[in-house]
Length: 326
Length: 202
Ligand code: SF4
Ligand code: SF4
Image (tube, rainbow over all chains, first blue to last red; front, side, top):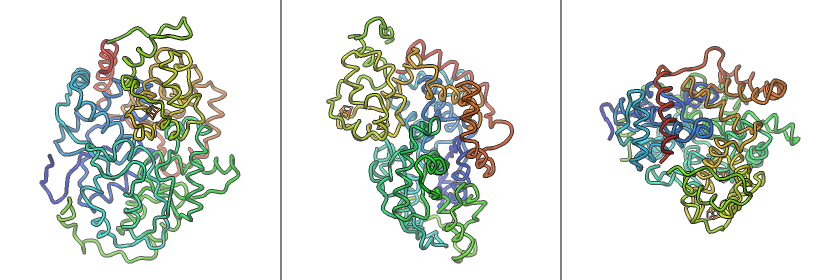
């Protein structure tokens, strides 16, 4: 299913809407670390919104699936390589929608009838994957470790996976069976591979409130508070997460939580890919996009700019062996 | 396939369960529910729901249509999918709640001040018009969907976050990001709506 025309494994990359807004630092850091891990990201042409967790209410179920249909139709034009996204909601909708379309001929017919109005069709059986699953299954955590030139020594990291990155697809066949949905290990594995220290974290897959937190923080601030409290108790320097909405919710509401609950949280929340970019010795701003975090991850910034010896680029060319499981 | 919406003239509607089984996504799996309560016990936000999913499902079977369709349960669900992965009977709880939300909005059970519906409509406007979610415009439109006064209040309460995001380049100034194929998307969505009206989802 994959075109191996270069030594990198090529994917059609679906960045999702948050990549142009609240989660630019996820997109920027993913694009920076991908080539280091032997992954080529070919951006999905003219991609549209996935519908997130409210599209079915605003637009109706079928129009919502049609959003995914249009993206898949465009992906198909770009080739049969797998589609990959770093966003939990994009993954949930696009992977979930794709699997429904593949399993239900009737639904595929309806989606194709709708797509025909835009001169498009989706007849392939593409595979839509999450970036974390690709890193676990295609790259391998040991290859991540090999690429580290600036180990994040001494950095204590609370690995906050959130919901939709693992639920409900992480341990399904179509989802690549890359981890469990209740107690996933991959995020702590990433942390360890980068030379940092994962702290025990029970709230690993607790919910941040998702879009309900965006529309009415009052209903869900206590959920974020629980996450912050445990991270604080565990002595975490940063919280690391793969999910755009988790990153935003857990970071941006700390002041309001402090006001409401009389707490004094000020814990940086970063993407795992930002940690990787720093540990790979890449640029703190251009690649790790640390300047985009509203709560500065000071310890990480120190590691990025101060200590640690970055090996000169090119000294360690990305080897073809860094692709796939040997 | 399309069955008439539930009759609203009686308090207990014995056809309601059947309507849910046939018209709500995943509703056909509701008959498998054994009322164990794992879903409600796993729910991060269950205490803020009028009824947890387990109870709501029992009420569906009992024909308590009004209470079910106006319940806050489907609106407080954050789509965390914990219930789905844990249900011992493989009932697609989240999907059922999501479609109950969509149908209760569509059939006019949701109030004008329903935050989720207003948010969803603002969101869809952006997705449909630009092909992308413009987080700024969605938020602004949502805030002001409650009227001018509340719009300003909500905006003010979150102004600091917004300014911080602008400073960090996470909220852009200027025209919305738009796809090239806006007319194409519009045609696709209009057609999908038409098909949905005629035939439903499946
Ligand atoms: S977990 Fe499943 S079987 Fe148990 S009450 Fe909930 S829906 Fe019913
Ligand atoms: S998906 Fe919804 S109902 Fe299920 S556990 Fe999460 S918040 Fe509760």
